[in-house]
Image (cartoon, rainbow, N blue to C red; front, side):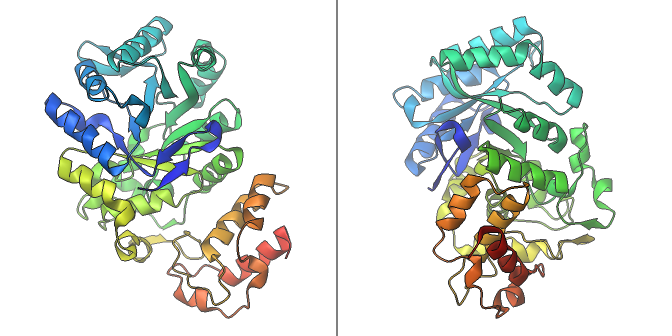
Length: 382
């Protein structure tokens, strides 16, 4: 297992983590087996978007004696009511729901308190100016949560929340189909096949800006819906009309700027074992570039996907990383110091490019890699 820093909040988290929806309706013994497997593989992240309180209680029992080995991402503004899991902004319900969650987990704190499902600008305004955010800040001050998170699917709203400075972690839906779609308050449009019938060209710029802004500001991204609810894994259900493997989806999500961890569901131990084995998979099993280049009606021409097909460089340059840092630097009027430091720490930089063109010949997306190296040298200095 590999680990990444979760933005500025001082936590490290496994690249592959666990989403708990697949635990619903399963016997308690299965939940214990899942946590055993997470521990044995070194998986540390657990997202608690899971409706049934009894499941949470079973999870709390499964965590006994090893709670400190996991990074828990619990949701604020959720309630179990009338046999259903619901979003709420009623503060009495918000407080009671979170207190109940903590109690059932048999802990006095969670690492991330995730303000649940914010996809409309009006909703974010009400949260940021009202009692919900004040409650989250109080939880953080008391040490009940270590970081304040926000979950959503709308890049416009997520970007506003990230830029506010109060959000430490963003739980966002990331996969190579959803990343094509413009902002929308209706999350169901992300899997509306009609939305993929046009001539889609490259990543939605607001999503690219969101990921780059998170990296620049130190907001860690945790990923949901990397498999699009499983649709992306099957050609007949995928909005792209092409099936991807789980490892290709994971590799794509982990390649976006700012991403620290991908939370994956597990409906069986075999499925969980497969996902946790991502780090040991051969490079060709994780390579998503070739299949993305075949998406029907979708063009990624000229867009660097940070896929690494440009390697190896005869000068030893990590072309994909230099390009990612270039994009992060260009996103601002001046280069953030953290980006400049990361660039300076590279063993070989853009100024060492000999313009041989080998990288461009290998790029499935015809990105202008040589020009990017020139720009990096100009932006950061040789």
